[in-house]
Amino acid sequence: MKIYSTDSWWNRIPACFTITVLFVISLAQAQSADAVHGYVNDYPLPASVVVVGKEAVIRKKPRMSARRGVARHGARLPVYAVYDGSGCPDLWFQVHVDGWVCGRDVDFSDQPPEGVRYPVVPEGKLAPWPYGFVHEEAIEYTRGFGGLEEVREVLPGFGVGIAGVRRIDGMKYIETAEGNFIPSAAVRWGRVSDFSGVQIGPGAPWPVGWVLKPKAWVYDSPNSKRKKVDRFERFASFVVEEFFPQSPKPKFLKTGPGRWIRADDARWTTPASLPVELKPFEKWIDVDTRQQLVVAYEGARPVYATMASTGRWGKESETPPGTYRIWAKVSAIAMDNTDEEEETELTTPDGGLPPERHLYSLHDVPWTMFFQENFALHGVYWHRSFGYRRSHGCVNLAPSDAAWFYNWARPVVPDGWWAIHSSKSDPGTIIKVR
Image (tube, rainbow, N blue to C red; front, top):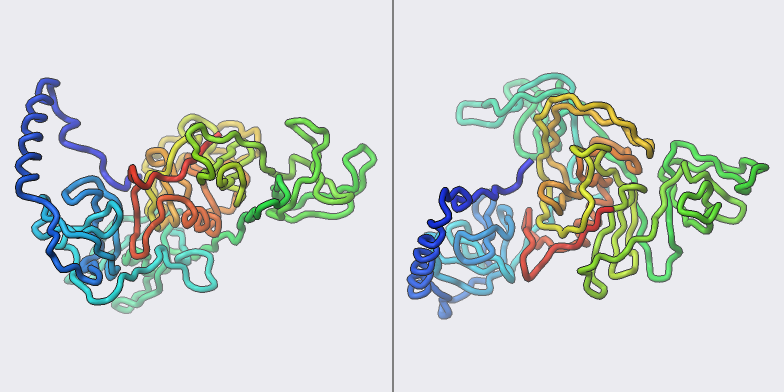
C-alpha cells in the first residue's frame, strides 16, 4: 500500500562528489528565484478559490514542494496571500497556514470559504458507505467513451464501498465509491460493526474494561464457592472496581457490588507511562497490544478508550512498538496485499485469530491515520474481532471509534480536504505502541 511516493531523483545520485556540484547549482538557482519570485502584495484577494478538477494538491511551500494535503472538487478554500513562484504556470495561493495551491487548479469565487467534512457519513449511518465483498471472480469496469472499460479482475474477498446500484445496457452493477462498476451478482453486501468505545470525562472512574467473550458469567465473589448470578454480552463495558488477586495478572475483576467476572473473559485499561517528548496537556494515543486497547489522552488524563485489533503474532505482521507521530491522515484509502506466500501458523497466547496470508484488496478504508511508514490506525468494515489480534500490522478500529480519533487527533483536516500531512508547525499527535 502506498499513498504518496517518497522517491526523489537525488536519492539516486551515483557519486558523493556530485552533491557539492548540486549544492552550488541549487544555491545559484535559489538566489535567481529570490530575485524574480516573491509575494504579490498588491494582488486583490478573492473571497475564496474553488477547486475545479477532481482534486487539488496543496503544497507546503509556493513551489513544487512536499505535499501538505489534497482538497476535493468544489471545495472553496480561504485565501491569505498570493505568491509568484516556480512550478506553477499561474500564481500560488496560500489556503492554509502552511498550504499553497497552484492557480491552475482553482477558480476565483465571490462566496465565503466552505467545504465538506470528509468522509461524509449519511445521517443515521455508522460509515461513509455500505460495503460489499466480492464472492466470485469478476471484472471491475469504468465508464469509457465507447462504454464500459475493464479496470481489473476482482477476486473473492475483495471489499469496496458501495455508492449505489446501476443498470447499464440491461445489466445490474454496483457502483463503487470510486465510481467504478462490478456486476452486482458477484458482490454480497456486508454490515459494519456498531461497537464503540467510551468517552472518559474529568474525574470519571478508571480503569474501564470490556467483555471479550460472546457470553461471560458474572459471579457473586471471586472465591472457590462463587455462584453465577448473571451474564455479560460481548462488548459490554464496565468500570473495574477491584482486582483479585491484586497483581499484574489478576484472575477476577470486580464490576460492581457482588459482581465479578473472570479476567480471561475481558480486556481492561492498564497504566501507561507518558511519552518522553510529550508537552503539558498535549494529546497522545496509547496502543496497548497486550490488552488490545487504544486510549486517547490529554496529558495524563484519559479522554476516550476502546478495544482494537492490532497486528498478529510474528515479525511480518506485528504492530511495531515505539513512539511515533501521525504523519498523514486520509479520509478513505485502498489497502491491498499481493503477497500470496503462505505463512507458518503461529500460536496466539491471548486467544487471537491464527494468521493467514492471502491475496486481499480492501478499498475505501475510512478514517486512516498513518504513524509509521504504512502502519496506521483506521476503521474496518471486514471484521468485528476487536479485542483480538487480527491485522497485518495496522491498528483496526470500529468505524465509530476511527471517526472519533480521526476528528480528535492532529493534524486537523480542514473542511473540503480529503487528506493532510503533518508539518513542522503542525506536528501529528503522538502514538505510543507498547
